[in-house]
Image (tube, rainbow, N blue to C red; front, top):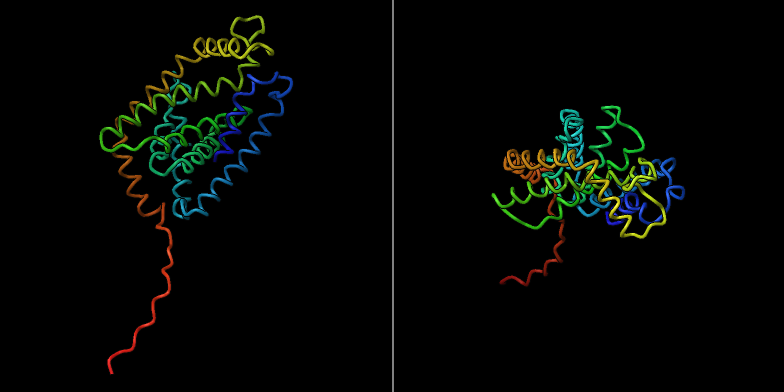
Length: 257
C-alpha cells in the first residue's frame, strides 16, 4: 500500500519535477492504470495473507463498489455534488486503510464502466479516491459523537483534497502558456507552486466546495447509522481472529494406584 501511495504521489506531482514532454499525457495514463491494477491486486493479496480480508469481506468489497458506482451518477456533474465519498470515508474508517484504498479504486473503476467515463483521467480519479479511503482508515481513534464529527470534518477536507489532486493531472496541458496561472517548465518550485494554487482557486474552488459540503452533510446525517451497520457486518464478515496454536500439553502424571 505504501508503494501504491508513492506511485500515486508521483503520478500527481510530476509537473513540479519534469516537463510535459518528458512524462506526457499521451502514454502516462495507460501506464499508470496498468501499474495501479497490479498494485491493487497486491494490496488485496497482502490483506488476505495477513488475515485482514476473508472471502466475506471480498464480497463486501464488491457490494460497496457497486453501491458507490450506483450512487455516483446521482450527484456528479451538479455543482460539484458527489454522493460517492461519504460511503468511502465510512467504509475506510471501519474496515481499515487497505480496504479503503482498494474500495476507492474499484468504486471509480465500476462507476466509469457504468457511466461511460473511461478516459485518461480515470487512473487519476481512482488514485484520488484510493487516497480518500486510505486516509480515512488512518484517522485517530474516537467514539460516539466525536467520531462522527471527526469523519464529517475529514469528509469535507477530502472533497478539497480530491479536487486538488485531480487538477494536477491536467493543469500542465489545459492553459495557454502566456497565462499567469499556466504551467511553465523550468520555473522554481515556489513559483510553480504559487501558479498552481492560483489555478486551483480560480478554476476549482466552487466545485470542490460543493463536494466538501455534500460529504460533511452526508456523513453527519447518515454516519451513525452506517457506521453501526458496517461494524455489525465487520464482526461477521471481515477480520477473523488470528489462529494461534497452543504448545504441546504436558504428559499426565502417574495416577493413584
